[in-house]
Image (cartoon, rainbow, N blue to C red; front, side):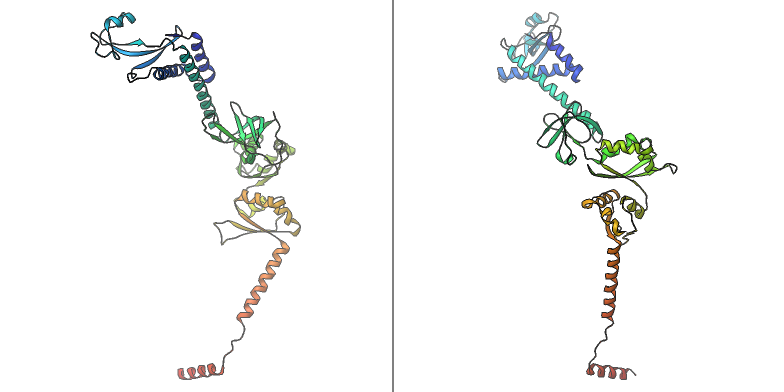
Length: 391
């Protein structure tokens, strides 16, 4: 056998403690690697009964052939005489199986190389499994990480046992990500790869806002106040709809906190992103009115002829039109995502003009239908004759 020392055995025990790889699994893999290396070196067809063996007490490793003890050998590859067998094991008897060492004399370097490869592979597999198990459980949750590097517009965030990647689409527009900055990110996905699993994180996901509210507002954590919907354009504005199951608790006031302390903490965490807290209601007119805050609304008409598409027509004062629509349509876009309703906004003067145009159109249609019908003399004569016959 080849003397490898007890360092190898100690290394397997250390891997079990630090990486969670069972010692028996590493030794079993070492034996398999030794057999594979032996078969590559020796070559031939009589290699089906070869096994590897590690003597932990002596710190030795070797390759053996399993043979059956017989009185007369007929196949030298599978059988051994009792006399030869007792040189290895004095207590063996006919019919038993014993290990006969076949380790080549120059197998030391190959054995060491195989052991190194197996241990390296096992470490990688263990790390891969640990990362996969840990972050599969964290998928869909909020974690805190440290920015390690920025490459090709991707930000790499260390979140424990691995560096997660934050693609450009998941970054807040205009925000500068500096090395060693701590960031709170959302674990979006975990992808299996041939190396370590790739963890994808987001800094723009609406769930980040939801979890921040759950952390800062005890009523939400206790279930008294419920978050019904969130729409977010990261770095600019977020709308969050809340409702209380207790009539004595104001959901909006609970989220704002005493003197705005709770909402201010969340705004600071989100780098001064604007947050509109909306009171949720089952009444669509009232819900849409609240969602278009801070704009004042005159009226909301729900289109009853399109219940499946959920369309609503909103009228606002002339001086509130730009506020209701928002910069580049942001306010009405967020309100649409929050409520799930398509919202068409018109100012009061635009609505009055539409009504006037519609009334003019109706009047024109009526006049066209009321124009006299010209009848020729021949047609008049025919009508007269038909009438006389009927009489």
